[in-house]
Image (cartoon, rainbow, N blue to C red; front, side, top):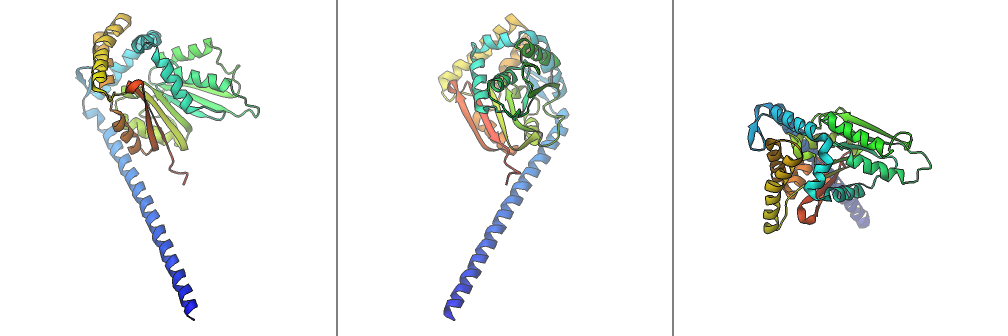
Length: 314
């Protein structure tokens, strides 16, 4: 009789513990959902009212719409010389950094990639080369979407891919779309891609929170976000030297090759004003991404942030 009572109370205790854990998990799930919905509402309201706030283009205070126009004109003016300008500005290191980004991505047959601010095609061209060197006996389809708000930049990138022989004929199992669209309002349904990359593009958008939210929306559960961008050095003397380079050397080089003084000032201030590594990591997390990490390259001159969309897998 006593053993039956002991067994009964043990079973009841286990049942209660299970119910408490279930309620706790449900509570955590509800809290996470409520937090995400509140964040989405906040970003939506921020986006709706963005036209009422001012932004900076270099040292000039402008409306968000004016800033978009000026940034778009800058890239239209420099589309043909953009790659040479990057080579001069980064002493050729941007090529190494982009190789590192694509190596982190590790593209495989079946990838469905959105490259935001893809411009002249540096990232998608690297991805295409990776795919062309991999065995794909089952003919698994891959899809690359190169998105940029500037059509001139896309034209340059598409022509580069053709010149390199990276076409539908040479890669029959890969489709490539060159799409002129706004990263703040992506023309794609939810859960459309399994990877999202951007290199030296996110600092040029007007509403960074909105862009991150859109990246999260269009990624499938399990999808990966990767961003390569100029960042901040932890060593003060090195950061001071880097600031001098971005404030004085880069604008001078820009003026010699393309653009105006206004555009040159914008370029340097956009680098300096970009959030530091930890702040940008927090912004990515607030957009809903999990397992967010970053890697500093060249002491933090640039960093690669990565994260996953895990909601929906559980």
